Structures are given as C-alpha cells and as structure tokens.
Image (cartoon, rainbow, N blue to C red):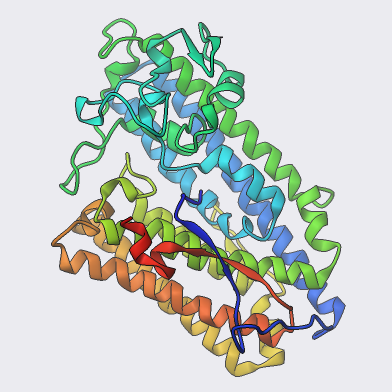
Amino acid sequence: MPSKHLARLTLVLASATAIFTSTTAFAATEASAVVKNFVELGHAKFEDSLITAKALDKAIDTLIAAPSDETLKAAREAWIKARVPYQQTEAYRFGSAIVDDWEGKVNSWPLDEGLIDYVDKSYGTESDENEQYTLNVIANPKFTIGGKEIDATKITPELLSGTLQKAGETESNVATGYHAIEFLLWGQDLNGTGPGAGARPATDYDTKNCSNGNCDRRAQYLKAASSLLVSDLDYMVKQWAPEGEAAKSVLADPQKGISAMLTGMGSLSYGELAGERMKLGVLLHDPEEEHDCFSDNTFNSHLNDAIGIDGVYTGKYTRIDGSKLEGPSLSALVAEKDAALDKEMTSKLNKTLDAMHAMAKRGETIEAYDQMIGDNNKDGNAVVQAAIDGLVDQTKTIERVISALDLGKIALEGSDSLDNPNAVFQ
C-alpha cells in the first residue's frame, strides 16, 4: 500500500508538456486478444492466491487445535507459499480501480502491531499519529474508538474489517490481511538489522500452557483474519471471472485495456516497488521499511512482484501446480509496431529479474533483506540498489511503449524516495 511519501508522477515522453492524442494504433481484434489473455491470467493468479490462502487457513486450524513448533512452522511455510501467487497479482492493481480499492484489505503495510497484540517495551506506549497505537485488541475485550465503546468479547472477521481496519482513519491501523497474519505467526522482529526474524512461540496459542496471556483470543484473532483473507480473495477471483466487473471493465475497450496493463506495469515498477518498498528503506536504512518485516520474506515478495510485471508483458504465468499458461501478449503487439523497442523492453525486464534473483539468492544464503538495507552494509545496499535501478530503467521503456502505441497521457505512480529524496528526511 502506498505510504505517505507516495506522489503522483505524470508521464512525460517528448517534452514537459507533451500530451499524446489517443488513436487506433493497432487492430481492435489484436488488442482484444491481448487483453483477454491478460484477464485469463489474472483470474488464474487470483485463483492460485485463493487456493494457497485456503491451505494457509487449514494450517492455521491445525496450529490452533494442536499448538507446537511443528504446526507453527507449517503455518509459517503456508503463509510464505501464499505470498508467491498473490505478489504476482500486484501488477493488476494500478490499472484497475476495483483491485486498487480492494487491495488495502489484504496487503496494507506497514502496520502498528500494538493495535493487535502485545509488543516489546522498545515499541513505546503512544504515538502522536495513532490513538490506537497500543490498543492491544487481543488483551482487551472492550475498548473505545472515537468515543464509541466497542464490544470485542468475540473476535470476528466483521470486527476486524468493520471496526479495526484503518480505525480512527489511521493508515497504520492494519487489522486484516497477509501482514496481520504474518505478525500473529512470527511476532515482532526485534533484531534490527541483525540476523533473525520474529520468534513468536507456539505456546502463544496453547491454552493449556499459555505464554504471554490471552491465547484463546489470539487464536480467535488469527482465525478471523485467515477466514477474512479467504473471503476477500474469493471476491477478487469472481471479479476476474469472464462475467466479473474487473474483467468486463478492461475488456470493454481494448485500447483502454492495454492502457490498464501498462499503467499497472509502470506504477508498480516505479512508484510502488522501486520507490516506496525499496528505495525508501535504502535511504533510511530502516528495517521497519521492509514489506514482509516479521518473517524476513521481503526478498521473495519483491522478486514475485517483478515476475508479475514481466508476466503482464510476456503474457505468461506459471501456476502453483506447475502448469504454464501463455497467450497473445503485449510483447507481440509491441514487436509488430517496433521490433527494436520490444527487444529493449524484454531485455530490461530480464535485467531486472536477474537483479531480483541475485537479491533473493543473497537473502537465502547470506543475509535477510532488512540486513541488506542496513547502514554501513555497502554490498547489501548495492544488491538492493541494482534491483531498484533495473525497475527505474524498465519504467523508462514502459513509457516509450506507451508512446509507441499512441495511448495518450497516462499517469504513473511516483515516489518522493525517487523524485524528491530530501523530502523523506523532513
């Protein structure tokens, strides 16, 4: 989710005031085939996200029924697997209002974890920006938000989504989605830029041998969040089915559908991923600025975002069962218009993927992402910066593709982290 640093970057192609007039640059049938494949791949990606979320929900049931190191480990592994297809859907977000309006329910970050559960003393006791900073819903069956008394005797999906999510209109009050579940499975990562992720004990769910109190309510919260994730993803699968509103919105006008595809690619590449999720952390050297900050899974999430961007262009997706989907692509459409430009776009996407894979390999073998972005870590910073540079560079070519296809003026997401770094420190 975009942070307060997110700004709007207006696409400039030929000059500071250039606006391109939309024309029919390619046959409608060709565009429709490309957009149709985009929709079908989107449906498959969200369907895989739902399948893996259901597996996570089942693993959580097992953890709650029989808390142990083994069942906690299995639930954590299920969470990591669930992130793979979901992250590859994020290129669908910025070109679709339906996805963008919904995304905060499942992937909002960063979160003030004191809203949900117990936290370490180093977290502090209050925040000028968040009245619910240490509300600790799990420990408090009744509390007040905005002068209204809330009965949270039973923690339900409705309580999380209707009352707690963005409580007090505060962005960091994240009560639902992958990251709330991540916190409940791992706990806080108190290692700073040192090695190690969160280390929540399985006994936090063991009502017979309870650590840190309120094990029954913690289980209620975890189950409610998991059930809600499943229902939210089920909703989005339906949106990308042939008669779904998200599908129909991009299929209705092939040229606008192509614009939506490139908007998603460019905005995720530049403002969201290169800027808010990566460059900001490098600038601040702050481990709190990593996307999957409790689990230290960030390098995998960033890699899968990049894979998702590439998939929109190439018209390809590998499903969780290993089957490969492929159809009419943006790449083919661009190649017909300008073969050299398609080659440039493909080359830059591959270069970014190579940098992301190098970062993921470092994450698996040397150090986690929060260590890579740490101060005085020249090598780690350089690995992350190489991936950022690839994303920024490929966005320049995405802009050229938009121009070549005569798609008109398109606004891509920007980021102070890239456009005005000094503002980050103010």
